[in-house]
Each structure stands twice: as C-alpha cells, then as structure tokens.
Length: 70
Image 1 (cartoon, rainbow, N blue to C red):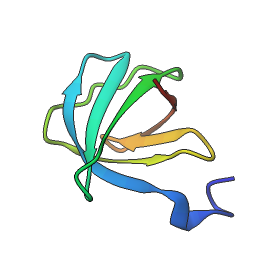
Image 2: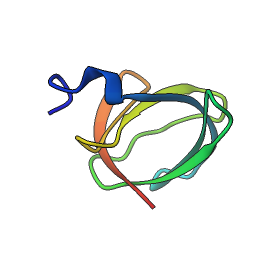
Image 3: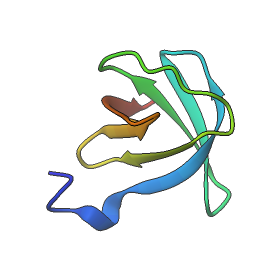
C-alpha cells in the first residue's frame, strides 16, 4: 500500500512520545497524535519520523511499525 502511494507520507518531528503514543509536528506546523499498535518503538523527542496514513505505517529510528491516528 505504501509503495503504491509514495506521496502520502507525512514527515515531521517528534514533540512527545511514551512508547505507545507519539505526537509529532508536521513540517507545515500541524500536530498529529498516533497510537502505536505494532511493535513498540523507542522514539526520542526531536527525532524525525514519517507516517503513512493510508497504510498506517510509522517509520522512526530505522524501525517500521504500525500506527493509527489517535
């Protein structure tokens, strides 16, 4: 799904993370809160990430996991 919709990725920086939820600021200034439903990912505040809302994939810390908007 992500490969067939490559322009759907949202890029941003982490502003809050606790292992099960991640809040990040998009490059356009909006914020998005995600609930991590796949393998837990250790993500640090300030770290870049990408989210694909169509495929529900979160890419951070060289890890790819499943996440949904909260």
